[in-house]
Image 1: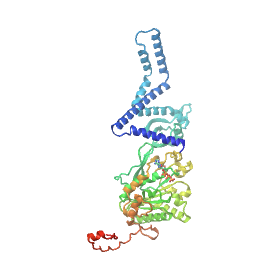
Image 2: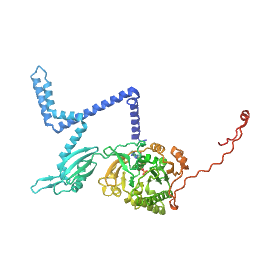
Image 3: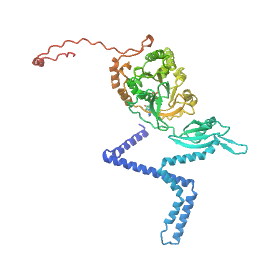
Image 4: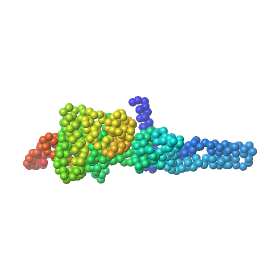
Length: 547
Ligand SMILES: Nc1ncnc2c1ncn2[C@@H]1O[C@H](COP(=O)(O)OP(=O)(O)OP(=O)(O)O)[C@@H](O)[C@H]1O
């Protein structure tokens, strides 16, 4: 262990000891400690706000306090020289306080309503800087008479994680003028990103993001009442609100370098669908050619899972068969499949698409590309959708399928060219290559309408995945398990459910490996007559007869 790591470890252990001995103590002693810590923290924070606000005012407006201080000192000096018999300090002190009144007022405001104070001051600073920034960033024009005309900053409002500047254009400008200037304005104000939202023909909102790092959050066991195939909760947005992701009618491509957190995205989707899987409204198919490490952690949620390229092709063919049969059944009746128990939404989850599309034998690669392309082009209206994860967004990893995904998730990427490959022209609005490497699970989610959103996907620890699989195992008629070695609970469940019949569309070239058939039971042997007790006690142990 390096000295720095050893110190961190020591520090963490020391902190844990202090917490256990104070706020972590059970009973009243622990409660008293917790209350004390909160009161001290509250008082310290508010005092700091007071000092900072009044101090900032004094630094920015030194005239009044300095004059007040000089006058107060002179007053005190005169009284002292004159050997004034009465009180010599109250008068000069009151004078000093009077000179500081605006600063004290700000301090009280900041201590009483810190958020309101911060936002108001921030909006004031933004307004003050607007003329210079707007001019420098191309939102100004010098008229013939020499006057400078600027786009008008109508309003500054705050959202969680962002400041919104409402800008009004003048004749000669378009909303695109503001959109083009947006990156420069965001940089001028030190924002971490920006977005633009048209409000009216002449008015546009410029959203400047004040944070690029979202806090980590662990997922919890899915709510059994939340049986949904439409949207699933996946994490938190920049403003801290819950973020949802549409599943039905969308093919989703998830791209991120190794360690970027593709697992979080995958399990957020699977976990969000878990109650619907258990209810038989969603059927999950898994392709995991990375030795099945990801999918097999929650194997019981998957109706069928493939960990070899040949098996993966079988899965793709089976899904194509579903598409063919549904297409025939829905033709002239409906244009959109509505999932129901017995007629589920089929969700194919592929972990590391490149293993199938780039690193397999050439025959398999070609066939996989053909099948995946067909599923992507025909599946979504017929209730067959794909969630595919890949590390590298280059052509060879995705074949010709990249443009067929209707929803993209860009986790951390290596370069702006990779971001461009995934998100096209959204590089400026969704710079996935700038995501901090210490924030795995952070991604830009770009929905079908092309709006990017920064999201931190929930983290799914292995234990939670196993627990979810146990709680929400796929119904028996959805399972065609390929039991593997290992004796964890989920594998035991999968092995036990091998007896379940697979309901897959029949067809020569659409077969999936059949489940293991149970051997027919041997007829019962007739029971041997019981020996008398004494004789039985003396007799040597005999082989037990199965009942
Ligand atoms: N949402 C998250 N919040 C916090 N930490 C996370 C999150 N997602 C992943 N991590 C951390 O990052 C590590 C790597 O995550 P993960 O295995 O999902 O990456 P990956 O993109 O699938 O990598 P690879 O392509 O190599 O499999 C995890 O072991 C975990 O410690």
